[in-house]
Image (cartoon, rainbow, N blue to C red):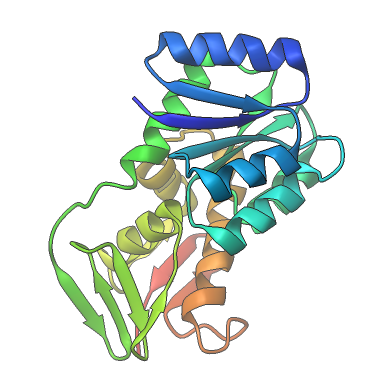
Length: 224
């Protein structure tokens, strides 16, 4: 189904996930360190990365940052229960989703499939908002004729907001539409992703002109 790079330093957890994901039809390559994973990505690009936050040497958050400098491929974090700070920092570093350990393989498989679905094009429309151009067919975004590199999740969220210009979309709706999540506590996924998109498409991210926050409700795409 998918070529997965799994980065997990616990050999028993890594082997268990490799076997479970292989039974779901995935091709899995496992490593124990971030350094090995980065070397693998440079040599042979996977379709998705499953990345433990707590790694020896370079930790998972730093690995995530380094991957984002190389590529926009999807990243799912594996986090210990209750490590909210790790989750937030990891999402801000560019992760697309997270799963709390101990990991239920069926849950992880569902998250993998959901993330990969975001790679699919929904239509062939080319949408223009001033200097911001979104080509849904080519999955390409440009601003002032400069290509903006978005991850699949960032692109999916931006497209969802663009589909409803001028409307306020609450976090619960966006979680369902973009991440296939229903747990409202995961709303930080939305907030972190919006911050990353703003950093890429807004002339001044602290004073957004495209994606506006409506406090207590959610976000509204209101191009100038």
